[in-house]
Length: 188
Image (tube, rainbow, N blue to C red; front, side, top):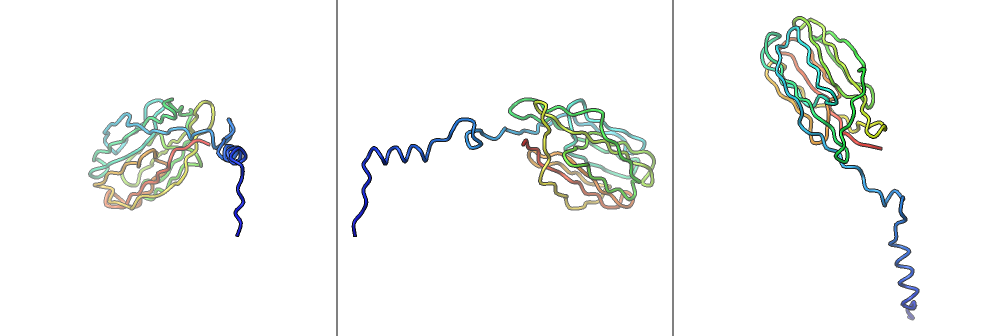
């Protein structure tokens, strides 16, 4: 059996052509670096409360202890892409739900930025959500997923790495069940 042998110059040229990545190609560009950093955190009494993340911050967690007179702690996050702060578009989109049977999910690529609650477990909850922009381009929220449900009267939930809050469900009173939806921040 005879082996074909290429001259060294031809082999080197072929290897260079195979390994060269043209500038501006998708392979040459690296994916932008996304970071969700801890921002503002506050605790408020649940009944007749409103909580709004500060400018250009979004919800990344919530904890509650007690009944409607108990306390809720909100955690907000700041999103950075390639070390540049992401803009939270205003005005936000608003929806209202009965608290004792809430199932709220933001529209595609919207993130929660505010929650208001009036009354007891049968009162109203208002959700506010906004779109995100980076360098004038929309930021995408992908891989949405729900947490396990937990008892409302004693729970804490927080987004994973580079995730934000995109939904909440709750049924019943303070002994009812609550779950959260989170999504991963990405560009492109």
